[in-house]
Image 1 (cartoon, rainbow, N blue to C red):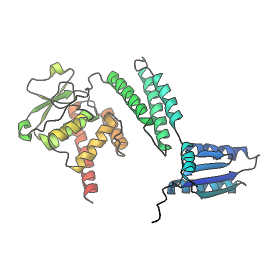
Image 2: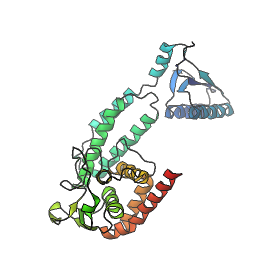
Image 3: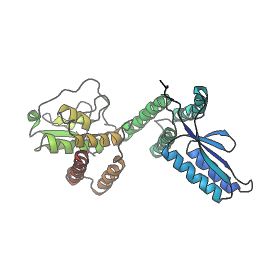
Image 4: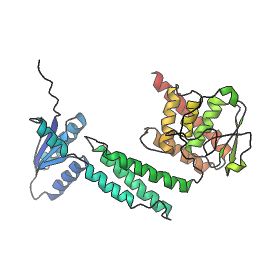
Length: 321
């Protein structure tokens, strides 16, 4: 029986450019660095084999030849496990993660200039995404950095929104929908993505006759109201779930694939972390645009319900096709 060869193939770009063509040499070097290529020796660059990498390297090789240089893309199979491990170590991103951790440690969440603070955090988040994008053999090295960055973002968000709920630990109790019919639902005024989406979910799928009360502090909430998305509210953040996700679990709505897609979108925009959704950026832009145009929460919810209705239709159609 022939033993399966589990060695991982690589692609090697071998190039040379005339020494006087400094501009083209620098452009090729910067491009290869951006792609996360390992440098085996001067003029020899390595990437794990794959269609996207092969297309990139082949295109760059053609550009180098057009500039008067020489370039070839070769398929390389390590001779043995030891050589493969040697190739893998060329892509170790530990130092990059460590450098970013050091930079995060220098960021003070209490820094008085919030705009400057947010700019620094966005810069770190962008650079983290760049490193992860070229971390072809990932380990757990990025997890501490991700946790530290998420904690930092959370601390800054608490300064921006002092009433933002903390994560309550424990399980989620399933409740009967009929017990929450024709109720007053209360949450903080100045709707954010989670509160806005949760209000839509309540009125669309849980309590069609729901009335909403927006308060400045929880003490202003009517005693009979069902609170959501604040500490002490009946429905709020639980564990890793944001309020929208807590409502889905509480009212057994998680089986709806379209609502689950919206939940990923809301989670990504509210707390970030490992949950991502490609539609989140578009929804964020729409929501910010609505908030610039509409400052009153009732009017904002009324105008925005159509947007989430359309997302729901779109996701439902995608899931059924």
